Image 1 (tube, one colour):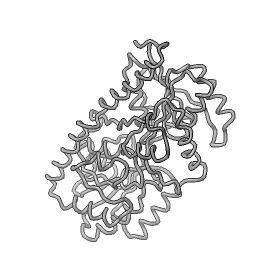
Image 2: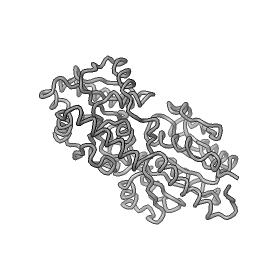
Image 3: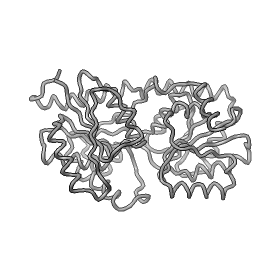
Length: 384
């Protein structure tokens, strides 16, 4: 008899947690697991990436953030109907609702999924701050807490999550999907009219204040004075007000002619392979998918020293202090100044590091072990 795993998340819009959830659902052992994906909100850009007849998708049709009572009733009825063996939340609000289900269905095993570390909550409203506080308070009721980074574990301990329930499972990067592909990179550049003979430096991130695009723009203004032949791209979609703020800032800095604004792309293999250098300048991360995927494509990275970025990159890229535009500019210029062959060799080492340490297979095996061990604790559920 298969283990029924239900994965609960707010939506399937583009995001690191959402992509990792789908990767997990698509690749878990089909003979061992039956998968349900439950979303609060309808639709999402990533829904087409779900494959396999063993996966069922349920949408709770939440209308807005204040549609609570009807949403809760639909949620509890669905859990009663599909009867999962394990209910696994992704991100704070889903984790909170995992705990709510525990009040009604105590025989289900409940997992918290923590995907970030050291969040600066001043960027968000009171409800978001309340979510994080409530998640921390209710964490004691989880059967297991899976975090995707060592810094995420430290964040949990700082906020008094129960230490004996915390397990670190880094994200898994599918190196069959993300790999060096020169032709894909050329196609992307041609589509967006980016010259093939220019060094292209990209920031791949949703448009959200926590991603700290402003220091990337500041760094560009410092770099072009010395390297006018270099071009830059911000790739991602998100908050419209924040996007306007960034566009205004780039005009003020006089860098618009050197900068491409490109919305979120369905084919990330093309994006990474179009870059010569990939940047992550976030204020906060757990495990950055962007860094892992770019490295798997053989692209060296420059990243802020947040989350597990230093551990992931190792000696294959450059780490700089978060929020320091001067240090970011210096790091990028160090990469630009390298001979192209040296940058390529650095990218090859980056891919090898992902293959050895952060493969999809490692993530799957560790997750499957956690899930099956939880069920073994309940002797009434025989394993196949």
